[in-house]
Length: 215
Ligand SMILES: C[S@@+](CC[C@H](N)C(=O)[O-])C[C@H]1O[C@@H](n2cnc3c(N)ncnc32)[C@H](O)[C@@H]1O
Image (cartoon, rainbow, N blue to C red; front, side, top):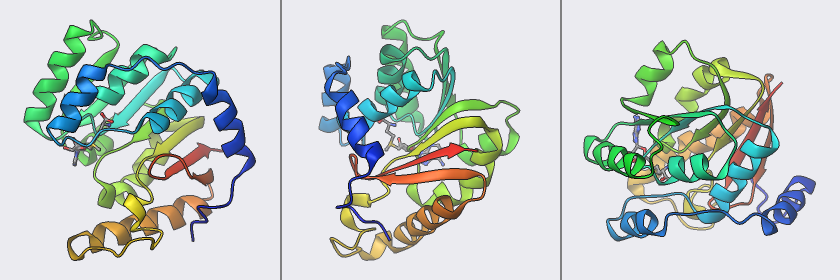
């Protein structure tokens, strides 16, 4: 389903633009995430995301999965976006994210929500130019109808971890506890690839990215 070895024109264009992109990264937050085993986005994933936000001049951003605020802060500091809403269900991580955002004086640019993403998606009246989906992998497929609805026409949806460390591509065997999640991710890939309202590419960047544009 996913051909990891096939470079696309888009891939090549991205690699070229990334080489010139010096992303500002908070190493302290990054290392604190790694040290405390908080899953955070890979550098090349964030570089792609920031480049796309700037390229498409996206202003209103939604992130699902704040963790400790590393990716939201990176997006805020490396793009021309106007505002980021970011959603987190875990209270301990949310509190750390709030502190990190305040310390970077980004509390006007980043709004943090302690919420189950599904509750937010079902009730929000907002629309977005760019959505970075980095929350619970097994839920991507369930979020999709709501994401398509709140994404503006021409807006971009980037979903992280579509390879899930090689379990989705079959490179490594799916562990028993991950079966439902991997099934959900495969379903998400198949659905975005054939979705009538989206143009999608699966990119061999980081842990596999779904890059969709709303028609
Ligand atoms: C991969 S981490 C996000 C990393 C972050 N984007 C970064 O790069 O710094 C995924 C986060 O999603 C959160 N999460 C899991 N289920 C959620 C849900 N139902 N609603 C909102 N957040 C959720 C987890 O607690 C976790 O912190």
